[in-house]
Length: 220
Image (tube, rainbow, N blue to C red; front, side, top):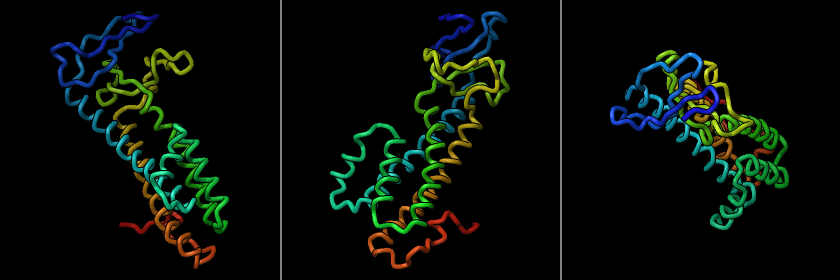
């Protein structure tokens, strides 16, 4: 298939079995670079992509548990149904923030949550790359960057210049996303776990947040 300067084909040839489905890129002006994606490169890319997706899912579940604690949920099934009516992550994030602000919560806890929420909102923009991107392969890139995730080719407002080698999330970029998601998940879970105990007991420590709830973790 060719659209403008883009030429691509799905990697479905018999010789390419074992390789993730991808858009094979070439530039119509410079001519195609004849080569095939490697299974090893495909596996490394898929492992990084899967790791990022897996880490993000714990952020989603952690946010749900924090919502339960903030509203004092007595029926988690009903609360979960309400919380998941909005499909967007940012709307759910706003729901948690609203619940925290309207519960009887000391201001330092709200302030700490706003820091976490701001970080999660920013990370969700990176998560969207994973959710809505498409895998491409360009032999002209360096060996570890030939597989990459880019915006949907058919979206007129989001299409990227994929022949710019700075564009797209490579295997290394995806591993970095997974690392960032993991750190954010640890911060969210620590805050949520301590918040659950404190709000249940009426915040006996007042404005004082435990170090883990403030995101201060001991070095291992």
